[in-house]
Length: 370
Image 1: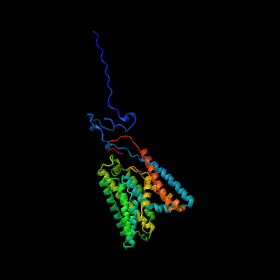
Image 2: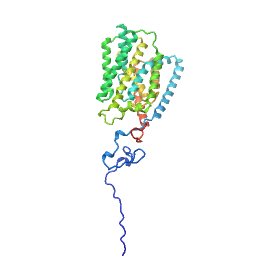
Image 3: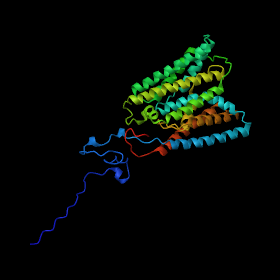
Image 4: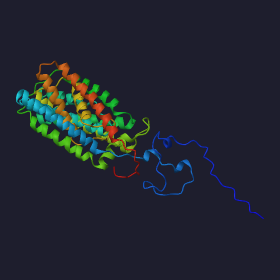
């Protein structure tokens, strides 16, 4: 009796549609159970077994930002050579003097961008500090040190209020700070009646302000490279739902970012008051644009968290040098404003390029050091 040969068994194809990532489209598939990224565990195929999207992180690649800073350093060297050839370097001192003023505002802007809370009131806060400080000294007879200390404290408290509102509502910080800029400028004009207050100082301490700018900008950039600092203060970047409340860590980062940038901008206002020997003009829009141009062109991401070390310093010196050359060539003031606006647009392009070069599809576990 012949035995019946066994019937071959075939695996029926899975009728469910395959994910787009299997064909090379869409996001990469989730890490497989038992891979080097995820410990092996038993699953029942339910949705609860899928890793949460919010728990996945990507690297922040510092090398990309450092490479851009090398390019900025080269551009700055070329600009210095142009200064030396054209006028013997006599205008370099003017650039350093301006950098001490605008640099503190630019550092504040960069810090707020790193925390995902762009502070568009940095120029207005500088106007408030310089204007009210000049008014208190010239009209109120206040001691200079006491008056400047009071206005810096008031400006910082104003930053605390803006940061608290943005964090409590969990809304984009630019909207709150833009409204705050208008409010504090109107308050300054109301108090000073729009008048420029002459205030004489023994020295404008431009070199001291410039060294302070270098210390805070570069030192802060180095501190930002610490993983725990960047992750906690820059947590606002990781929000997956724009309308969802950011949570305690992200809210704290927004509060610290806006408050810290307001404090640095207030110091910039004091430096401006000393440099001009009087209170500044009624609007701080141009100063805000210079600060934004330096931060973005220096490589600080518009999306938050990602940034280099000395990019803001190099970019601020380069932007200030270009505008100084243009101003001494006899161009109208409006031309310098247009150049600063152009640098803001170029800075947006820098953000786009650096973000694309920093893209990393590797998936890491929560707590993995980035």
